[in-house]
Length: 288
Ligand code: C2E
Ligand code: MG
Ligand code: MG
Ligand code: MG
Figure 1 (cartoon, protein in one colour):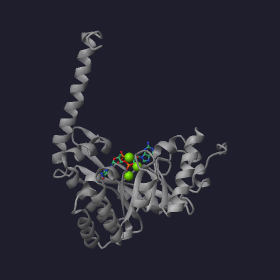
Figure 2 (figure 1 turned 120 degrees about the vertical axis):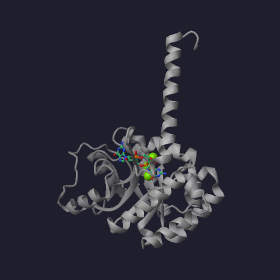
Figure 3 (figure 1 turned 135 degrees about the horizontal axis):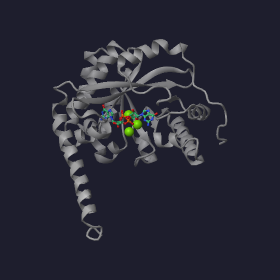
Figure 4 (figure 1 turned 30 degrees about the vertical axis):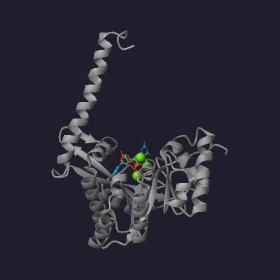
């Protein structure tokens, strides 16, 4: 098939492959210097409690501003950091920065920090957490660690031990992107999750397919039975918010409320919060 498709086509295919490989190599090389050059920053996206319509927590999301590459998405560089082991330094830096911001700028919010599987599997991770809690004099419950389901697949024994140790510390644990990975219902009973984050994929389809609504309702029921908190990710429209309120989701996060922003801006948003209207749709919600 490659031969038949002609020379031009084959060439452009190899060029493209080359370009993405070159990009990958550049990212890797530059990422090694990113911390030392102070190019990483942490932004925060608020989570809003649906019962009280208040901001109770925020997710820390790393950003990379490179002088010539521009702003590189964590979806692109976090996987590179994971493959190269750089995630340990980057993750430790994000965690420390989030703790510092939690202490100095956002003392009334719970801060959720994403952790890669490799971080949580490292023996020293729990100690790192403990030291940060001491250094910044944080209540352990002010901190939440977000992990994804892939973690559960890799090294169950160590992961399980560390998750229990994190829980012992009093730090909360959220399961990110729930519903998209491999997690069976059995995992939900074996791991001490405090919160399920319903993946954006279901929220995106919430208004258009009854399947997505049924799945979201089922996840919420499951969370209730297991005593877990819930938050819907990627909420962009008022009508999605209304459906989620209606089916008893505890909290939402998404562009409808705010994009991730610097801690100082979130402080401002919270100060203005009570004077802002709660978004509402003009009816026409799906029936079930
Ligand atoms: P995530 O943890 O699931 O984070 C949510 C992502 O959805 C964020 O993308 C956020 O900006 C985006 N998002 C929030 N609301 C909306 C919305 O309404 N619509 C849409 N379309 N998107 C929305 P971001 O910041 O690009 O991060 C992507 C992923 O990179 C994260 O997914 C997480 O897996 C990873 N990541 C980010 N920061 C860190 C970190 O510090 N450590 C690790 N290990 N991973 C991180
Ligand atoms: Mg997350
Ligand atoms: Mg997520
Ligand atoms: Mg994600």
